[in-house]
Length: 254
Image (cartoon, rainbow, N blue to C red):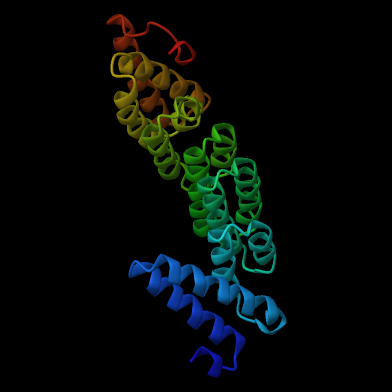
């Protein structure tokens, strides 16, 4: 029936829908055959494909089939930065599943580059946060921290979300590197302390005091009444923890 569809985008979309339905029904062999047919048709009609959504779906199907070179080439033809970054994330996830960790790392770094081209602050921070989480789950801790550092909007919300994934993945390296950035926000600080209690239950008081100290340091130069009151409150809390013998070492020693 799909042979009767003249428009290349519609024909490929129909085949991709059929493959998805076959996969959902448990017919994985049929889904693979349909996907291969779709890719073959797409190769013949690639110059007739106009819709970016069709290209996106093709790229994802190519990645699922292990054709990473073609999947990455499809990503290059997507003009919308957010969509391109999302496809690169999909490609990286498939590469991780198939053991191509080096390729996955490169794809995620390309996704970061694409994400930074997104004009809207909300979409950009959402995409960077998603990429950072993917990097943590793939084992790229240092890359994830650098990606998280590029989030400039809603950091107090997004950084603790990334830290949550660190806890779930038992990635203490990335988690400890997120301590200081989170310390510049009271909201993020309390969220992070809650997460740290899951990883370092015996050292929470020490970490708590250290983060308070960093908060005090970060705002000490501000002379407004509100900030001065905050400094006094944090000083009292930190001194109380010190008096209780809470500080026994720095994070690096954990």
